[in-house]
Image 1: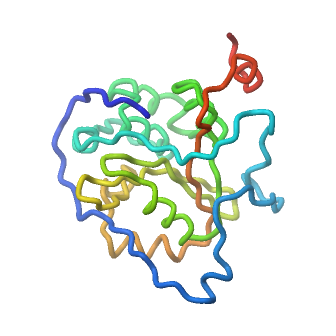
Image 2: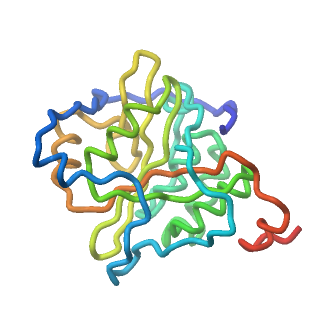
Length: 228
């Protein structure tokens, strides 16, 4: 888990939190429901390719401590179109305000990060193997979060459309059990009626970040590009 750090806070007005609704099940829904798995590559830009089987298997949903201070104290002083990953790790407390805005000023704020780059950053930070795992079913995506996300914790999520356009964001569970959609590129906490309708109707591949329970060995770290 990412440890909480103190962040210079500046109170901001938050909108109504998003609550995921548990959808009623039906036979048609159950037939087409798919869980998280390595989906076949359909030959479209950006779809995930199979990963190296010699690396530790990523079987645990990655959850991170998420404090109210990190949410209320978020400051985005430079606005860039592709800074969604920078926003997320700043909200987790892995970057302070100054360093996050330095990244936004750099080319990273313009180009964004690929899924493999994001995974390697988490490997560097925590030492476990990390991998985005996809599902093409919205109910599987939300059910996984509702079952496994503890209060005051968050998951790193995202989606990708058929053209390869990607976006990442945070889903956090507050102390009272509410699941919040947090994305500084839109209102920090999304309105329930707007977000639920928009998400459910999207024809995209949904992502959640998973990690291996065990740390990677030096040989495995070298295999993914780290010099030890």
